[in-house]
Length: 341
Image (cartoon, rainbow, N blue to C red):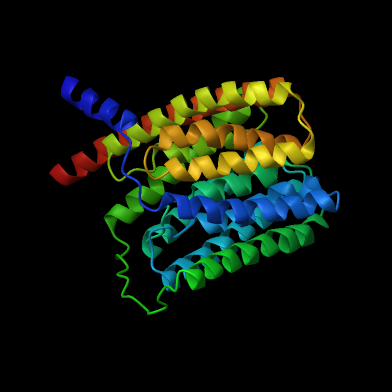
């Protein structure tokens, strides 16, 4: 038991080697920053959530060759925009939080299975859950669907342009490499069920216990069950929780300053770059930057008191990581029992 705990805590603090993270950080800054600056100039920062999630397409395929990277980013971008459309429909229908939780949990399961089959990097459904949950929680009407398509789609297109420009600048090869696709078997179905159940339970708990920003609990749970085995899942959950708590402290200081919108964007883009420098090396360190980034972006798109944002982020993350950890342990136990039987 002590040896197992040692492996977990060693994994929590371990920082991996650099793997071209600076190039990914620059692409992320351009992909996220330019759409936000455009929205600032036209006075529509209320649409910044749509732009940000669309631009997250640039974060996929960081270790892949040019052709599969662009294909992966285009596919991920389409799924992110689709998740926002689904979330916007939930909001436009004035659905209760429980309905939003069920819908986003279904997104989590479906995208997890698709990502496994397509060998996405980063793997899993975390960004899709975040996009669907955030838009389901924001006030929206039916006209918002067009805005999601226009703003989110334009951000995806811009991120692809940035990626292609970097490939051309470095004279990368567009050869079509072979990319094995794993069969949909017991491992894939176990991952899908684990993510779907964890997201559902965490979302329900967050909606019932807190009521606001319930999707943060779902994101925390999805992150906590995202590893290939139980040790990796426990490491991920601990990193998510510790990084979030430290990031909330940074966010509290920034929100207290009441920064003007243009400076908020610059700070958020800087955090995006810092998170990309570490997300592949230590998820906990990346969360220290991702947390204030998320809170700053939400403060731009949907005015809320800083106290509420900070409180919800902490409580919902604790709920999500706790639920995800329990589901990960139970899932591992069931898998071992099935293997013995």
